Length: 114
Length: 112
Image (cartoon, rainbow over all chains, first blue to last red):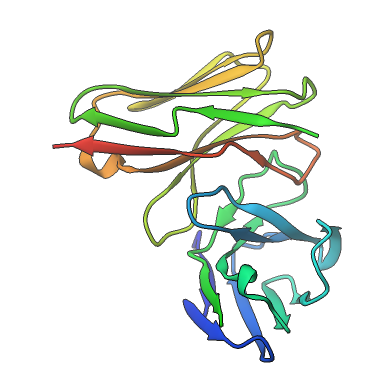
């Protein structure tokens, strides 16, 4: 199984809402990532978890809060978002640390902030 | 930090012809160069990668070449098929670094 799953596929939320994005992988990977992708742009790295510990935060605003409950799950908690946060949010995982290990991407959650 | 430039931004080819996408990078310490294909409504998928100790790598109709001296690498797709239509991203990274620096992407359209 080389699949990364993400739920929900689509999410519409108001600026005062709190919501969460979920990501799951069962490949035994120890690194998991959140990316943000705007239309017609490449993915931008937001966070990296390695062995369930946050190892990289790319200066992401605190209205995005990641969580890694265990090695298979990754959440992204959203609160007080802005319309400009509307984007495709991609989760990825890799075997270990470093770019030498292939990153497997999920299909993404299409987020719209109204 | 690393800066990756990718050209062209759009590419239209006749089915059966070849497609070539070129990328340049700035960080001479980068030593891992993956290529991703992203179809509509899907996440990026790794299609081929190359490391700095290799000059060329082939996988069926796809090949990647790397020129470390000139700091550029290219993706070659031969005998293109309609299912090759997608957005292609090149990337560069140091192998001990998590962060992939992506190019801006190339939208490839294969005309039947």
